[in-house]
Image 1: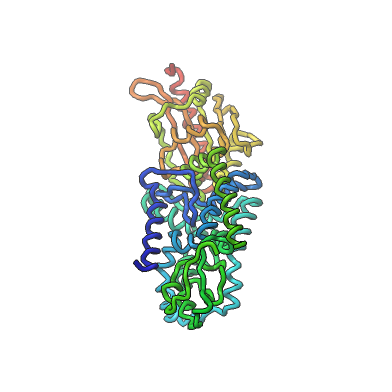
Image 2: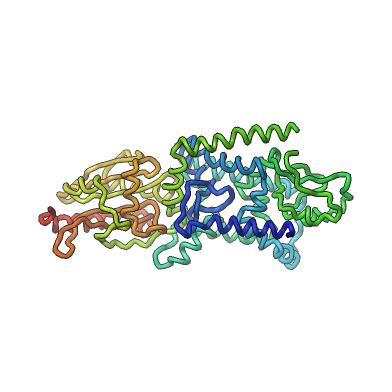
Length: 269
Length: 207
């Protein structure tokens, strides 16, 4: 079975697992990826939501704060940011929109972003995590969750569409809808744009790529710098020159694409 | 090799710590019973429609909690549920504080009696992230929307007449009723007024 087919099965498996709450199963775990506990079928808590709960308005609950980091840490220390590539349902959504993005960008004549701008824009997600998830929650009480596009997609939209006679939009609906529309535009015109630039969980996962047991390795002796892998990489990484790049989601597209077998997964090095 | 050593040491620290947190603290149960099972309605960006409808049957079929029944002897009981990290709860706290003339509503638990038109109404304010199980479990007793319900939630328990018997009955509202803090105050005051009238109508027949 091809690597990308295995990845698709993995993503579908975790999408299904994330929604087992539809059978009434609720756990006290945190999702190790981006998914919202407001989803009517949610089985676990959003790690960002738990972090927000733990520090809300200066009330610090250390064990609650530590909990999502321990869950994310336990998984990411082993598989690194493969969580984004193999587990995350939002990753699956972006995988579905990825083929569209190239066509749409060409049709609209959108220019490619300069590599400098791309590399700088990647730091936005760290800012989103620190400012919107941590600082504003701790100081103001306003939370990322209130405008979260993923929460809107998997929580608000299903609940509202299934019960539109029971609910009315509240004051956060319109801002969240605007952010959601921008999110959809982003993932359509920029393949994996959410993962690359804005995902606050991606910011946490990225740090683990440096020390995770699993990584993508490029054999410099076999590599002929044909750059086929660079074209295949949905995260826009300079694969031949990368070493445990924080942006690598270990999707394996470069491994499949390399005609010389120079790229592979490695464990422990 | 050095990197592998660091990874293994960190895994050796993280996994036992995670096991310790799950087995020796309340975190797992807190996440399950508060964050996963009781969503924050403002985080959901939705408000349930505010329809005041008094019911006799509790939503989960359980009896009314003892702490409600004790206070019901002296007048209607107004239950106010919230959690941390809930913008709508923050918006509604001052409304409840104003109605019941309390200053310290940021406390996790509060029980206050206020007289409305000569009838005592007991406010029981509960932050579900902190209160004990008997209070927390009462949320499910009055959560008429089940999985679609959330916080903030307001329940007025009073007395009603049902097929020859006077029994406790309740009405539940959610979120910021009618989507505005001013209208929410009106709606809650109307709910309290209705509850008081029902209480006065039925108290003589209450065993």
